[in-house]
Length: 370
Image (cartoon, rainbow, N blue to C red):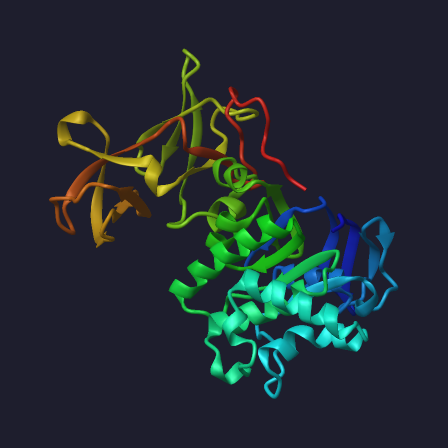
């Protein structure tokens, strides 16, 4: 396997810039997930690594070799597509061995490779079947098997689970991650599904408008988002945002004053000044429901969503929608007034103008950005 280095990579279509100077180092054996909304440039970046898209400027290196001018077949990478791309007239074994056959690999070596990979992927009993006789999950395993038998320097996955149902996606996420641990393969995985990113990645690369917004482990991205975009995109249910002004008391305590006049206490933020326009961000699990006699800020209940283990409560606060995640089963109804509190240690303060997170003064390191 090999590392992948991307240095100031730019992709333009005529006068339209799609990727704006991408810098990214992927370590040997690392599982990297490129995540972002449709049109953010993640698939374009993956295709540039594969050689399926030309690089307008910059460099891409695989295993220490600049590959800008190399054809895809000469880059020693394997790609797994969303569409599986299996030959319908070939059996599972023939699909998996096709690349080795083109290389004129000895039949004995092909047989050994197919047998070993089929055993890893649970395909041993299906080797004589054709794709039409397979389920979606089995077809995806065949596509992965075809990539694995080549023993490439890196694996590239382009939204490989998008065609599967929710239960099968969950199963395949686990299988791909287990397979990565077993093979130790350098892998770059593209998805728009932030749950896939959180559950599979060693590091997440969050992208928006052709720019890397943040690079970090799933926990770093979730707990310390670099900006409002990352905070809003990563996490389900989504983070709540409330605009207000930053206030500092004489004793050094800080808070955000929102539209209805309520003051929400926050940890003192680095670089924040009195009366600065800020945006408070709070994840649903960091907002609590308290009794009327416990203080809190009044909010009107809009909707209650029972989820079995937990409940998601939608409320209106100063005209803003707020989501609350609770393990309790509420005894109130829609349109009732409840009182809520915010976990001061967990909520975030963002500069409304720059959209950047203002870390607490007690935080030694700010979030990692590219």
